[in-house]
Length: 198
Length: 198
View 1 (tube, chains in turn red, blue):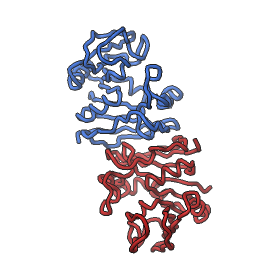
View 2: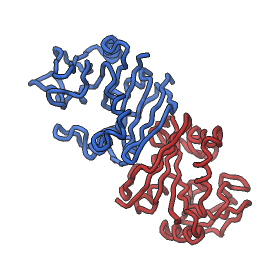
View 3: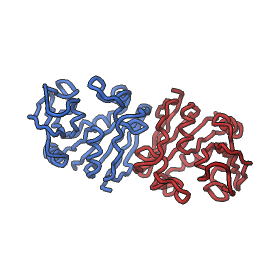
View 4: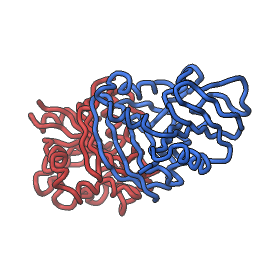
C-alpha cells in the first residue's frame, strides 16, 4: 500500500546539513561526507538506494530546491542539472507561485503555495499506488513529522560529527517511533523507523 | 587485548539524559525509556548487556555517582543500592577527596581528584587484561572522546525523542568514528563504532 516515507542522511550528532550553507556548498560545511555511502558503496547499499528512488512523487522545501528567497528571479532550475535524480513529480513548498518546470528524465518541479497538507494531497494523487517521499530539508521533515504524516522514517547515519547545522528531529512532537529494521556497513547504519501519531 | 569502551543509551535526537534531572529522577524527564530494551528484552539483547558488564573497571563522573555538589557530606553511596551492578572497581572523577567505598558484590568506588588521565591509568591497572568502561555521564564521555581515549563507542539508540537534556556528542572534536557493526530490534538499535584520534 502507498505510504509516506522520508529518507534522511544524518550525522552521529543528528545533523542533516552542516553550518554555513552557501550556493557553492548547499549542504553546509562537512555535510557531503554524510553521503559517502551512496557514492562509494552503491552496491552494498543497493536496497536503500532503490527504496529512495522508488517513490512516485517527492515533496521538498524551497531551501532544498534552491538558495533564492522571496519572489522567483532568473531561471533557477534546482541543484541537480538538466536531469534531476527524482524521475517523478516533485512538489516544492513555497510562498511564491511559479509555473511547473519540466526537466529531463521525468522530473517536473511543481510549486505549491497553499501549504504542506495541500502538497501532500497533490503528491499522493500524483504517486498513485507508489510511495510519497518527503525529500527535505530539515524544516520540511520537521513539519511533516509534527502533523504525523510520515509512515516510515529511514535514517542513514554516517559515522561523523558535524557539530553544527540543521537537526531535523529538534522540535518534533507529533510523532512516535518504533525500530523496524537496522542494517549497515562501515560508512553507514540504516535505521528504519515506523512512525505513528504521538 | 584490553581496550577502552563506552556504552551510551541515547535517544534518536542524541540525548543520554533528559531535562530537569533531580534526585528523584536522576536521568531527567522521559529518559528511563532509553533503557526499556535492557529491562523488557534482556534475552534479545544478551550480547550487548554482557559486553557492558564485562569491563574490569569503570570510570564515571561525579554527577553520575550522585547529586551532591562540593564537599562530600553525609554518606551518599551511589544510586544503585547495596550491590551496584558494576562488580568491579569504579573510579569517580571529583574535585573532593574521599576514602574508597567498598560495596557488596565486588564494586568499590574510588574517588580520583587528579584528573581524567590519572583515572584512566588507575582504571587500566585495576582492569588488567579486561576492558575499561567509561560509564558516563555526558560530560565525562565528551572529555574522554576529546582526548581520543575511547577505542569503541557503543550507542544504544532508543526510538524516542527527548527534546532536551544532555547530548554527549556535542562539542566532541578529538575523535574520528567508523561503523563496526549494527544490530537491533524494535526497542533499540545497537551501533558499534571504532574510534581513533581525529
